[in-house]
View 1 (cartoon, rainbow, N blue to C red):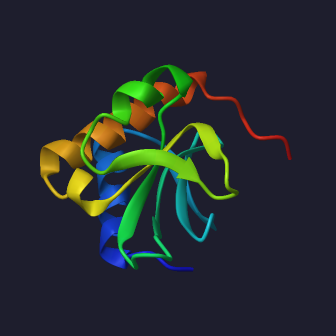
View 2: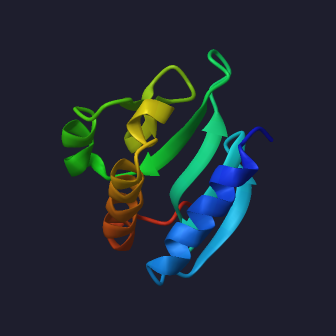
View 3: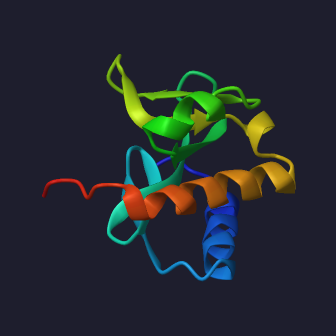
Length: 118
């Protein structure tokens, strides 16, 4: 699993500071933070560039607005973009206010997200 341990710890602290109850799971080639048993936000490494990136579940309604932000693009693992999910490259989360935006956006959408079928 390829992800930055420092950023994973930072994400854990960010979620804890916001009172989110979460579970960290290794998945999607990195680590995903599950809130209410649903993938909320995560980290993995872009195989093409080797750079760390965020995986953020923002919901379909917010996706277009989010993709206007620096470093943001549709999440694409299979050749087709995943609806409601984005990847964010480091230039889009290296400032604390940008990091906070992504964490808060993911948490705001989480209550509306559907659980995956087991």
